[in-house]
Length: 330
Image (cartoon, rainbow, N blue to C red; front, side, top):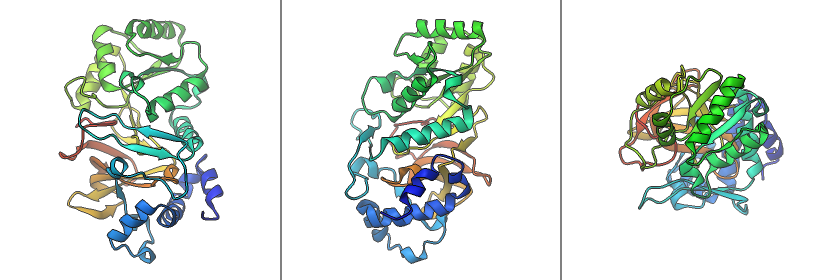
C-alpha cells in the first residue's frame, strides 16, 4: 500500500479532491499498477512505459467490459459488498467488487451535498422498480442511504404504488416542502401517464434506462413528456454506473457536472489510447473513489467534454450492451 493511502482516502471527503485531482490521480495510477494485477497486466499488454506516464492523459484507461469478465479488485483485498448491473436476457452483468463500502457512502454523500445540499433538508422519493426487484444495485444502495439521511416521514421507495407516490407528492406540494423524486426512466414515464401534477417545490431526477420495459426514446423526448405531465420546468439527470462509485449530475440543461472525486475525459473513437481533456468522442472517467478496484475507466458512452470539465452524453457505441444508466441517445 502506498504510504499516502490514508491521506488519499481522507481527501475524498471534501473539495480537497478537486483541488488536488491530478496529483491524486497520479498517486492512484501508481498504486493500482503495483497492486491490481488485472490493471497491471492490461497496462503491460499495451506496452505502457510507466516512467512515461506523467499526466492524466497518459494514464491507460481500462475498458468497462473488464468488470464483466474479470474480478477487478486490488491484490489481497476482499469485497465488503458486490454491486451488479442489470442485464437483459443473455447479457452478462458487470460486477464491481467494493473493498470498502464506506468509501462509496462517503463519496456519494459528498457528491449529493455538492449539488443538492443536505438530505436532511429534503424528502427523498425513490421510484426504482427494476432496481428494487433484484439485489446488488449500487443505485438502490445510494438512494436508500439518502432516504435514511433524510429522515423525513414521507421519504421512501415506491415499487409500483403510483397512487401512494402521487398522494405524497400532493401533500408535499400543499405543505410547500422541498423534495426530490429519483426515478428510472420507464417508471417515471409510467407514472407520468397516470397522473398530472404541477410540481413547484420538488425536483424530478431521472437515472436513465428503459430496462427493456419500454421502447427507447431520446432523452429530450423523455424530458418533454415529464415536463408537460408533471409540471416541472426542468428534469434533472444522474450519470452513474455500477463500475463507478462517483456520480455526475445534470440540473436540467443536459450538461453534466462531475462531483469532486470524478473527472471525465474524451478519447478518440478510432484510437482508444488517444485521450484529451476536452473534445468530442467516447467518454473516459477517472473516479478517485475506485481506489481499490480501478480508477480509470473507458466507458461505452459517446459525448462531448468541455474545457471546464462539464460534459454531455450523446449515445453509445452500437456494439455496446443496452444496460445500466443513461442509455438513451440525445
